[in-house]
Image (cartoon, rainbow over all chains, first blue to last red; front, side, top):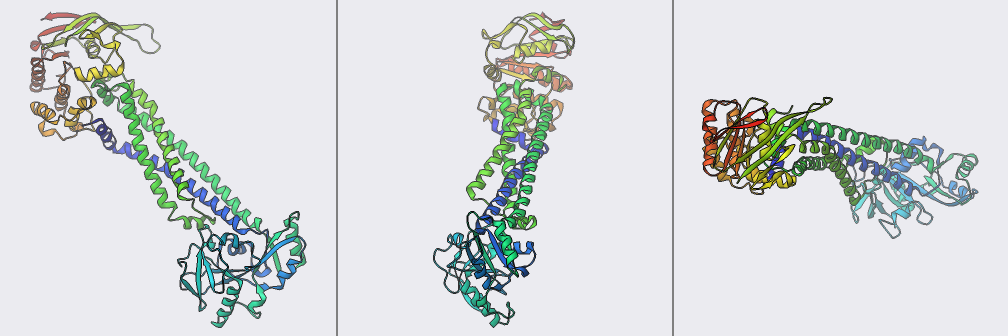
Length: 401
Length: 225
């Protein structure tokens, strides 16, 4: 028999109390940890999205569809394609205020070996590109040759392996880090490769172009506006001056997502705060109620030689052990929900998600554990103090009155 | 060990909003010697339990001093007094005789665990056997009957071989057979060198005392021994 055993038996021997406290701790740590990870993942997602855009204006054919669909294709990698005459690029180059511009080509694979779903193929002009290459360099430093591709992190293809796209063997020379967006399931290639694939698709009887040759089309033009020029004004001038195209400010594409994110983050913050306050209040009530119920036991412990300090420690240690177990369980449960179901949450919330690195995740876990472990013993301090000051003789003689 | 009480008094404040205080015991002198059974009897509310609690170190007197081998126990700090209580005092309470989440054996071993031992299982089992509780060693204490709990508290009071055993109404609500058993064990403890101080409002046990004291209106009157 030891004092540690008394602690253990006191925890195990009161299953209802222990379960109630564990439940509160699980909820508190789970919401704190899960909420923080979710919130930061979404923030990381939108930051990554912002970084990847790199351009001020995107010009696409007017027929490219509604803004939401366009956003999905350009930002989320939802498979889709559209084309316009490549002369648009030359015309845009002459537009006042345009600093840099680069064209891209979109294509959707039909039945790629590697994937069960269709994937977006994005072709960029190696010479002029300033939007894709900066972050593509993280995965591959060289220049993409004909039929070489870089795959998103969401695809199972490994570097060095090949994918058959419209009958063409394309070699994966790099794999990108996760972005938390739908672009993780896209394939990147040079514009020549994509043009070759369009031709190959036609060879397979899949016509993505009506009359034009793949050499005469582009899907979009990314524009960087010169310093001192108003981006909105440049976009408006393009929309007014050019037929059949639409110029969209990239920031406006993110604004909706960012607004959604701030509402989501605020909701999570309010939820965490409410759960913390409520948990602390419930813990205080449970410990106070228990203090009344356990007067007899503590009077007995006092009479057999427990000092007041030791009685206090007994209550605080019980609270500490339950809280730490509850906090760890809460983090475990939250991890089991947030990490495996991240993409589901991403789809439901329609927000990009990028999980923070392991060190940050561990940091959030430690913070959640610390919050619970501090709250529990603080909530039990009053009952610990009360129990250590009980009138031992009276309770042993008269009961808990 | 020699326990002496000099001129001890205890008064309580009345309830909230009521002026004045109640004098429970006043100017009591008592000397407790090893090897003797002391029985203090008196009517309910006469101050017997208050005196017992003061002598055992769990309730400080309003005035006077309680000395164990010449040292005033209420002049030392709570930690030292608690340790003294654990090593030198065995206490058999009237109520709350066991920790319900522990087994009978663990309850008996609890006082030795306080001083960092708690490993003398054979001693605990021997005590439980003597008190007829050997079959219930591994049973949780919260399922025991009143008589079994009282016997358990005797075993616990004896585990650290204390110098003095204080028993508050140890035969209250017990049948005659169990009451005899309780006194028998307290006598055995006294015979082995401890002092036993028993407080009771019943007639039972007065004839078993070496020293019989009556508590009347806060005063202690020696009747025998």
